[in-house]
Length: 357
Image 1 (cartoon, rainbow, N blue to C red):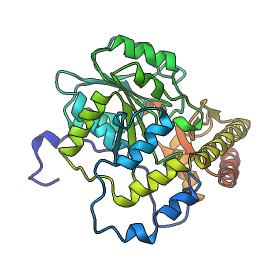
Image 2: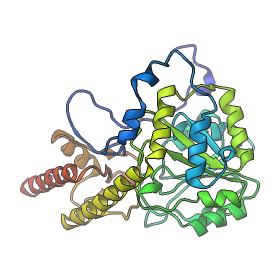
Image 3: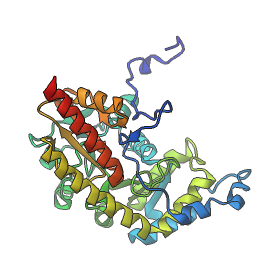
């Protein structure tokens, strides 16, 4: 840290992204990317003709992509916001809808960026503990009078709350934004986009990084009442109106057009998840129920850090979190069936070695 950093950021603990190693080839199951490539339409759209126009700024409104998303989700283009990944939208939301008087509330065990944004903007926040079974208790957020932020399905657990429970939170907090982060909804969860037509305080955030195989392109979107979208546009245009590049916009448009391809891949991932969870339980692991593209599991025989380190030595990368309540767990992204076979083989080896030690 230099002597020039503003004192208000001196104690800021930045978010730690998942490892993106360059030193060797891993079976990479640590950052919830799709194991399947973008659709052929996406690859075709990012053509020589499009790259030849990189001398021109992209459309800051993203009009064509907004229209395609609006048609897909049954809303108007004015109900759609675009930005550089869903993280960008979360960032703008903490800027727009929170301040020293209007705080935020979110689960204690959830996406690690939420408390970082609260700290960055000096927003007072309440981090609610999960229930004993690691599920979110929606009643904790009813009438709380703060911006509510819930990942649904939650990360890193993969568990979701119901649409009726989300509606109870919305009804009881009419003066506050309720942000539902649906980054993982396409793998078996239930979206609450339809509720945006009834509640002007609901902001639904999604991403192209997971089910749509565009993590490297950085593209996210939100659906909400026109007023909330206008608020986000004001923040975006006050920071970086050109925050989505030309190639990403083109890729996003083609991805929406090839929605059937991605739904098929999401169904394959969900099927692989259920099979993997069953086989992990047969090996003696405790696996939480998940409707996301990852599973959260632990062993009574091995510490979470040990599982993470031993798998890494064997060329398989998963995610481990140091928080006390979940330190015995690891989060495993669902890859191809072949990748999951390798994972299971290596875990069996680790367990065998542990018994022989």
